[in-house]
Image (cartoon, rainbow, N blue to C red; front, side, top):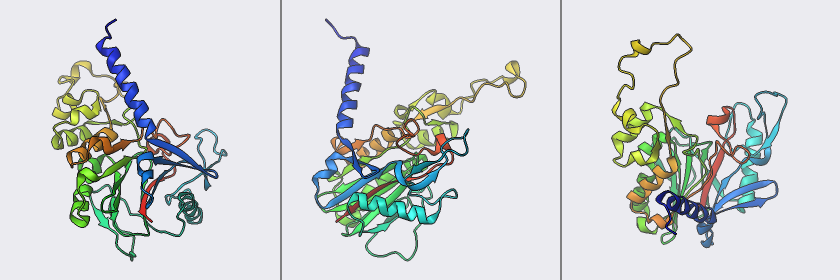
Length: 316
């Protein structure tokens, strides 16, 4: 019996989803759960992991209805609702769970940029930027997220690694591709040798964006339409869906919602990495949406007041 085109595409999508999930595993360490890219575990000199929500020392009010409800979480970012002592304790727990509590831990003051810092020794201050790279043993590079995409890169031939924070602004600025280019300059990396792990972030299902974001992507990428669901062409062109608004004018508070699109940051950054020279088979994107899975991850867009996770990579 012939298989319809729609059914065939559904079968292929299910197969791709199963393959993607086989590249990831949740490893438990005490009360903590660490998400790891299985292909990275073949390198004994490499440490990596994406933190998750459960466990830790912080107490987060996760209910907007019941202000007395507290949840114990692994918050790794400094926030008004948390104490520095608890965040520092959480970071130590996370490092210990990774198996390298004595490594030097370095993070950034993230500013949604395309700025990368190469780490070769101790820093005098927390640098502004959104990517870190090193070829030096003993350093753990970390980027914080709560919906943006954390990207970990490893060059196994030259033993060089990088951690990247990619929100929509960093994605438009091609921060992942620029990090690959910088690794080539600094370490002699060949892009075809790099493995990339794109950790949990807000998914296409939940990441609603307006015309300003759509226009930015349309201006920078010829293939951007494939990363969006919704009226991409209309929003990208700036076309007014209602050129005679006075004909359908409604009283205040009764206007229909603004027209939006849904953006897939995983797909966009995977394409950027492939265009930078990575082999598609070496790009592994986690099939998790932080907004859908607040049982396991933090989501700023869904929760507002929430914690921060980290994607961490280092050479040991």
